[in-house]
Amino acid sequence: MPEGHSVRRHAREHLERFGGWPLTVTSPQGRFADGAALLDGRVLKTTDAYGKHLFLGFAGDLWLHVHLGLYGTWRFGHAPPPPARGALRVRMVGNGSYADLRGATAVEVWTATEKTLLEARLGPDPLRRRPASDRAWDRISRSRAPIGQLLMDQAVVAGIGNVYRAEVLFRARMSPYRPGREVTRPEWDALWPDIVTLMKAGVRSGRIVTTHPADRPRAGRVRSEDAQYVYRRQGLPCRLCGTPVATDVLAGRNLFWCPSCQAD
DNA sequence: GCTAAATGTTGAT
DNA sequence: TCAACCTTTAGCT
Image (cartoon, rainbow, N blue to C red; front, side, top):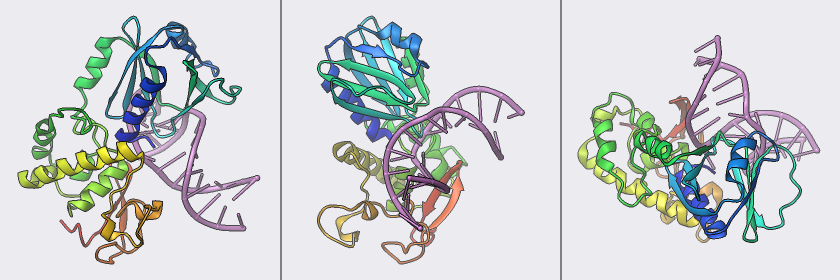
């Protein structure tokens, strides 16, 4: 769920359902009681997404900052909401809709200044209007760290997660172990637009589909098991060359790649 | 119906 | 390096 494309969808959905309306904000679980009291009754003015961070802008220059982490989920529906149960961190109700937030890593009320500070320490977000991709290139081209680690670093590129990391490198036929400084400028000039294209497609469809139609075993609607080249396909034959997909742990996360197509 | 693993990050050790 | 967060889903029975 929560790579950058999902967060962008969440921002849009909040704006569509709640934009311009006062919201009832509660924390049935209690862990966000103070923040909920601060926001309760305020009008949602705008929403924003930066990398994997979601911002809901309320009247009075208060921003609800949410990072879902690994487990966090939003659930939307028509009001009235069902009875609250379990660890329901935040419930917002207004304009005939509700939104429930569970399991998030970060939920806090921020000022515009705090929001700006966070954005300053994130790398360019491929989904924003004019991402400064050269800032990412500067970091990558000067680093000895493997490209598979750099792409996951939110200070290098904001919004890429484990699925896009694996898939983007496969599509570039680039080894995840290649040091950043050994990535050439032409390679980067092809890699970045591919990241943008794939993530924008993810925003549109709500899922991560990276395979070309010709590389899928069947035509028609894309099945989940056909949607990716290497992510979680360890041991299965590479869709292009048949070599078993390899797995390892890099940057603390499971990595998947084809040792033949992505030899170096 | 159960179990294991997961798209992520922070903070303690 | 590891635990915590504590939901959802895939895969198996």
